[in-house]
Image 1 (cartoon, rainbow, N blue to C red):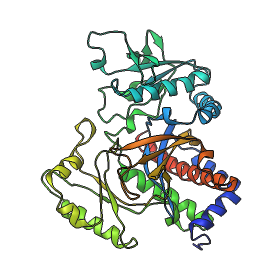
Image 2: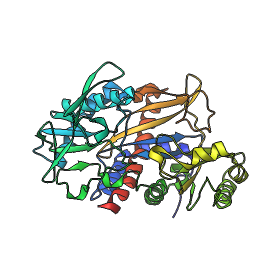
Image 3: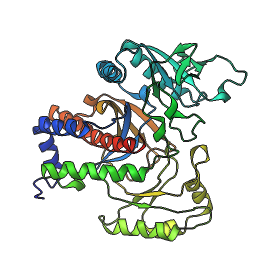
Image 4: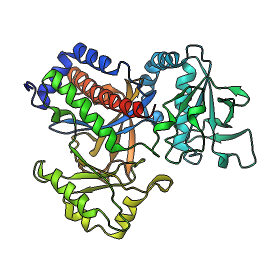
Length: 406
């Protein structure tokens, strides 16, 4: 392959000047794939590259999006739901059971309004019996912003989902299934998007980034781009037990191998392949740090949400962010609907440096209207195009994950 685009500036200029061709390529790559209903992608921008560093198929955080972007997303929401069921009237949202997380409830309020504004009725239904200890039909909750919402006890009758004795036409899954419910989802005829078959009980970051590498490499080859400009290098390591220390030397060797391919003084992220909510992450600069981990750190790396034991690890290049907000290092999260970018937010963390894990204690969120990051009209166009490109390529990778389980 002849590489014509070999640095970040050339990449930005090419994407902006050839957006129609880039967009046509992405639409063609999406064709025939089960693109998730929605997703969010964490993106790091360094001096040298743009790279996705995480992908969430059941995103929370819609309450952190710019209101103008949410308003603009209404046609996309409707188009996406019509593709699933053109006759749908009632949409169900299957949430996490975070009833005490008032910010998560704000997220549910926001996404409910987004769907209501697109012309649908919305019911939030849960199959977590612990939320209905007395077999209640519903529970009333109040979000952080003071908005009222109601969780209905979900029911299944003849393979269809119901809430409040009303049949659900489409269910939007917002539960990451790290602790799967004992439901035979394949026997449910109600459309559920994204599929509950790809939750964290099964999903692996290692698989996602292997697919992303395939997608990014093919995109780069098509346009003559150095593929390193749009991805972080990584290694996948299996069969590690932080409790017994089994496999730590193998993990340490993978860390050293990756660092040897990076510029001097680089760091790498060691991530649990099934980790979520920023759990199971360490930032290290040598394999020796892995081998010599103290018990407290090993305990943090050993078990995640709902007691999932981490045995598969992703060793990922630490992409140093150049984004700052109020002098704090920050990174961008882009939200997508049906593979189309609809907005994003900025995650900042004053307790971390530019190579640190910002999705950790001390993080704050800032609503990000794309115009907020511009220094000039051209810069605005460049950032919007680049973040959208990376996020859409990552979402194509997630569609290959979904295809595996359908």
